[in-house]
Image (cartoon, rainbow over all chains, first blue to last red; front, side, top):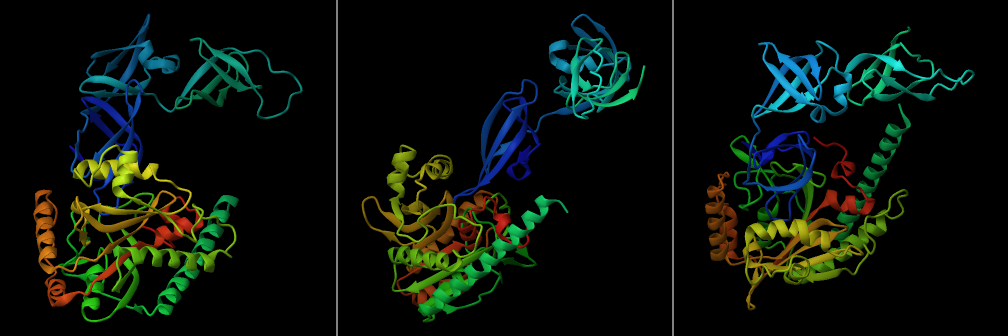
Length: 187
Length: 305
């Protein structure tokens, strides 16, 4: 159980059995009246947001969250199979992973967040190295540093890369933004 | 140093200069009106009992949440007009408009009622505005700071913005919630506004007027959506005051809150006789917020926790 004095941006709470994260928090207190704590919350799985108001006497449920480190094993159609340190398999669907599925590499270590033993989030390493499957050659003579061009990974994921990147180069991708971060090696 | 940080520092110092001028203007205003400037204890054994105001402890004692009880004792002793500017402390209050340590301006006047204090507050803010308006670079968050201001009763405001009458049928939970979520956002903001005549259940230390239904002679001042001040025609009936404090002690205990001892020195002063009087507490930091258009209370103080 949380009390209202625990409330802050980023706190994970449970509302009607569902896990939410507080994205905005305001403290209000009318003259001589009781404090009112207004939170904008975001559902941790489907991203739906709503506003929730608490008074000083209210108690807030604490979600049962656990984190487990797993390794990515293999892909089977729309299913992505991970394995924990006790060789127990975990199946995650493509829709659950979203764009993150494009950045997985074999044996990658990921953190899986569970709410009441249901997976709710997967965190990849901040940077992953991927090969550029295809990109058109950069236009010669264009020396501006911030000009980008489209490129594709073998999984079909499309991103913008600098002009000097060629097909076959290995790049570093930031999994928080899904964007190009750096060149690792040239083909 | 980046330009952003430099600009912030310049603006902060400019706000502090404006604040210093405002303080000077406030002291001049009260001195010209024969008010006595006083300093009452900051650390005390018995802070005023209020259901939703919590004091910070300081050893076996507490830090004051308001100088109210001591200032009224001075009125009972025969001082007719007193004012004080100083730090007050309230536990667990932190937000865009709240600090656990803040500066309060309070003044008390024998022979006055809450209506007289409306006029005096308008005159005070007009005087402060005249003294600080030369400070460049700031625009107040509300026009019409030099008065006169709007007046609206709690009953009319709730009927208009929340659809019910808390004076006829009081509901403590709904009152606070609707005040914050429906009434305060709905209040007109073209100029400051006095919200007047509270339900007797929300009277705190105010005198009640025997109408049907009765109302408490209390008002709150709003400016630009910010609650600036709280004023009463003071309750002078010692027996009624003791009854309210004792009821509040029971309510605090029921909520698991610290029950402060009754301030018997204050009660003795009431029993000796407090003249008919009116008093007001005004949040000085918030007044500076309004005058400088600041969004956060942190912007108008030299240091914050």
